[in-house]
Amino acid sequence: MPKQKGLFKIEGSIDGVTFYRNADGHFVRMAGGVSKSRIMNDPAFARTRENINEFGNNAKAAKMLRDALGSFTRNATDSRTSNRLMQIFNKITKLDTVSPRGERKISLGLEDQAGKNLFFKFDFNKKAQLSRGCLKRTASFLY
Image (tube, rainbow, N blue to C red; front, side, top):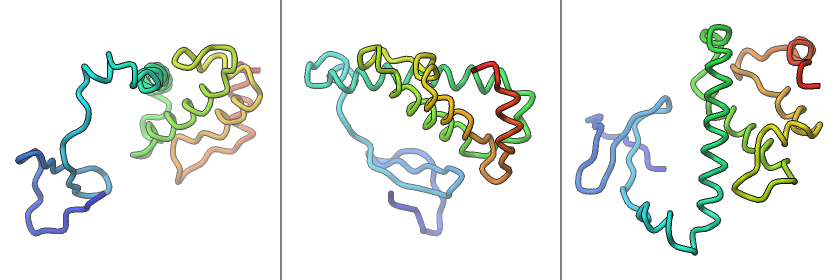
């Protein structure tokens, strides 16, 4: 991804070019892509719609978990916690071998021991990792 190195730090869009800032610095990207109506209706994008559905379900579940643990983790998270949590939830969802693509669920993925192991490896702060023993005792309700 192009990184802006110029004198002026711009945010916003100009003629199809978007300037934005995140925790890693200032970046530039071109606007574009396929229209939403084509993705939602064209048979060629059926797999994309399946992925959108699963990603949306995982995002809702991750938000529920972050909200439920909010008071415990508010000062313990880093800037990439949400990204790492979504990555783990996506992997756990893929362990659901019962449901068809687009309808796979985290709860069914967590029934597999591999899903539980992925969940237990998650740390809210990459630089201040919890001990695995403490986390296993705390999350023993999953067993």
